[in-house]
Image 1 (spheres, rainbow, N blue to C red):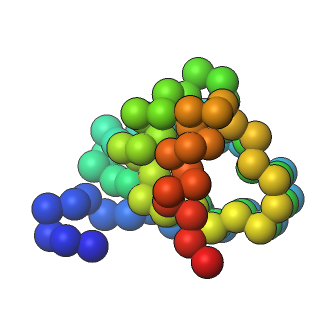
Image 2: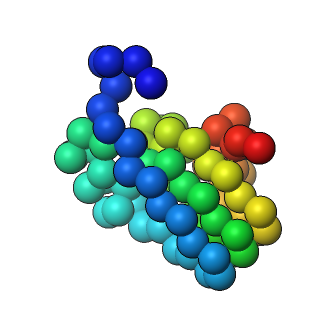
Length: 82
């Protein structure tokens, strides 16, 4: 990570995870980006825009299923690791 980016908040989950717009907005307001690691089902709220997902999510490691709008899914596929 370069010095001009904010810190990253890491999230690890096994099972079903749901992320809301307010959670992503809160991370950005705190100057953070989110690194997400999920084994299971990962759901994005329907009101999350592709732009918000792009700005708030640093990377995604997912073993399982993703439920997100087509636009958000496209952004997340670019952030997938492993």
